[in-house]
Length: 193
Image 1: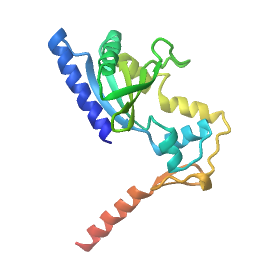
Image 2 (image 1 turned 90 degrees about the horizontal axis):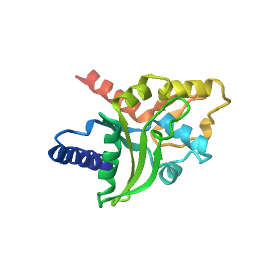
Image 3 (image 1 turned 60 degrees about the vertical axis):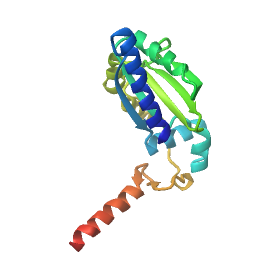
Image 4 (image 1 turned 30 degrees about the vertical axis):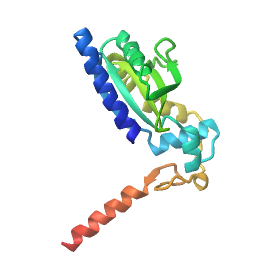
């Protein structure tokens, strides 16, 4: 995704510029991420959107994103402010889960941007402590989802899901048909040698 590569580069440059002016780096680490097919389907279901590629393109702007890990809470807002000063991205939405944490203790600043190319991307900014809590503590996304679905009546309707390259079995498992096809092609090539 071009927008992701562009924002990662921009963040590295902003980190270096900040370091020159303040003798320290506000950004400790940068991770790019893309929502999994299951996460995309879940979000479409929660929002009441149809399970089509067109629906994904029209309704989900946070499929691609960058996670920025900072040393200190004040660094989070410094990085935010530096991004807002850029003329090639426009802030669409801001959710401050630091000032307003979720019930499970999750904290992060989520910023949804639109690049001049028309692409949307999300930037999540948090401290290392917030990141550890989000990845392995009570705010862990997988733990949250397991708890949510273990007590819900969430059901897949596989016949309504149309995401090219992926399929859902009746038991709710997501299959990556493109990856499966690539794997089969590799096995075929190995047998011919």
